Structures are given as structure tokens and as C-alpha cells.
Length: 286
Image (cartoon, rainbow, N blue to C red):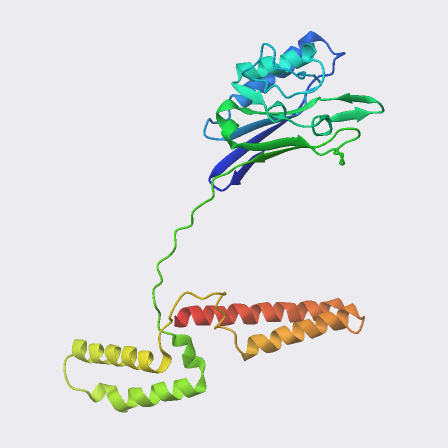
């Protein structure tokens, strides 16, 4: 599984190692396949190999100081040595053994009076600096008798580049009757009732028309003064309001059994169309 967190890509490999009673061939085959899969993960990614390894790495790091953090649990067995040998071969460390913890935060499997540590999480040694904590949650079970192991990573926060604010003429205010009327009066006053009667070349007439429209728009509509704190819904109009009110009413009526579901669905589609239409027209106008 791959997960993008901030600027970091985490790749998790979930494992279930062969149990003690299985053949050496089965155990060797498991680790051969695991090495093959883990080797394909890019060094740029944070790799975590986690699961039930069916082995005990032991309390101390004897002989495996580069892989074992010295804060494990119990006695090491043959299967535990395989785990540590895998970590050594892949330049990884057993994260469960890095931080000093009380017994309840180390034991991952409990059955009656038997307590062991068989569930491990391994990370590359180069990513040791990303670990802030690893512990068992003793009060929870993920599967029967197994406790969840929680690993906390420190990740780099993505710095969002602040976009430069560009002022815009608030042309959507032309939907307001008073602004629309004021805009028309000023344009008529500056251009006259028949703009085509103006003298000059086509380019000159076009420039005069454009400058007039821009100037009057600035005077009647104004400029935006800063980025909106919330999403701007200047496309919101009476048709949208009415269609949404109708949709909400029919939803309530349908829940109370006063109308059938199809009536509500029709109103829902109508409201969506009204919103789409209003947004489209507003975007074209801008």
C-alpha cells in the first residue's frame, strides 16, 4: 500500500510469516519473496514492513545492534534471528525495539498467562529520524489475542505558495437592478444613444467603447479588495434559491411519507440543473 503524506510517500508491506512448526524451506521461501518485494521499493519512499512475523527478537540487541534497538521483550528464538537477519540484509531496524517502553506497550500477543512479542514493524535505518514513537495499544485487539502496534512518523509539512491576489472588477454586481440601471445611464451619457454615429476609424471607435465600458464598470461595480475568506457564491440567484427550497421541502415530505421518492428526485435534479446553469452563466460573464 502506498500513501502520500505531505511530501513523503509511505509504502507499507503487510506480512504473515510461517509458524514455528512449518518447514525450513517454507520459512526461507517466505523471506526470499519478502526481500524480492521490499527491494523494489524506491529509496525515496519510506518503507514499513509490518505484521505477524511469528518470531521473538528478544529483549536485548546481542549481536544485532544495527537492527535491534535494545528495548525488546522476552527471549530470542530461531525465528526471531531470521527477522533480525532480514533486517540486517535490507538495512532496516525493528521499530518496536527503538523506544524504551513498559511491558504492556511491548507485548503484542496475549493468551491466558502467555505473553509474547511477535508483531513487528521494520523501517529503513535511514528513516530512523522520522520515528517519534512506537508502542502497543494494550486495551485494543485487531484480531483475536493480537494487540495493535502504533508507529508515529514525523513528516515534512507541505508549504503552500501564497497566490498573489489580482483585483477584479465586480461585474456580477450588474445583476443588481440599481447597479445595472446606473451602468446603463452612464454608458449612454458618455457614448450617446447611438455609438455607431461617433466619428473616427473603427479602431478608434472600438477603443472608445472599450475604455468607456471599463471605466463605467469600475465606477458602478467597483473592484475586489482581497481574496474571499469563503467560497464566493455570487452566482446564487432567485431561481437557485427557489429550487433548493423546493428540494428540501420534498425531502422532508418524502421522509414523512407525504410524497413518493420520485417527486423528491425530480426536485433534486431540478435544483442541480439550476445551480449548474447559474454557475455557467456567471463564469461566462466574468
